[in-house]
Image (cartoon, rainbow, N blue to C red):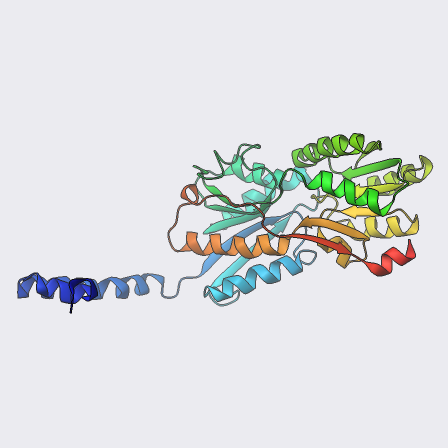
Length: 325
């Protein structure tokens, strides 16, 4: 038998380790996994979640997130507690909600959304944070770089730069005669503002007049669609944010009522009756976020876990809605 095939134990013996030293070493090695198991035995892990939508509205993503955690051995109701919070577009509540979560002493905070990320960043630099979906972590200042975040936040960035241009292009193909379009979103969110800048560039290249609708509550959504009709808007592009997600059914219903073709930034809108979406697969982001949680539970530091980019995108069309429009 050659040395390269020797087990570590055999190699130790072959190097003439003294019997007493070897026994002491073996006992210590055997004790390590036992000690580790003893340390984790009975451990109840706690995740504080801060999302842009309620747990009910976020059920599909949460289902995938919890399923992946179960594969790693964390089961809600057994050895895992989830404390879930959402401001539902009321950003002024974010500091209070973050304070509540920190007060529950979570092992990790999992969050989605730019305002949510900034609120957590302002409140703690010590609790590990996993982003399930944040548009530009480096640009908003919650991470030093994608490859080495250097702070207490890591996880998933949710958007690549040319998504908005592709959405405008697809909407133009869907509505060939489109001359005027609206971009609907909560412009308190810097990610929505950045998206709007890309929408304008793409629209100009296609000779389309683009206007923006800044919506921050349900009443704003209703007013926006009334304006869209009165100003003869041909189609609407809807951003995904802390206002549009809680009000997604209202947005979908108003678009259908006014027969306005609408392009959405998340598949969940189409699943609930919206016309079309070209978007990052948020299900995939939540699934991958669970792996970050597992690594942190096992001792990894967020500062040393590179932030990952989306790799899956979805083009989804609701045929029933298409026929209605």
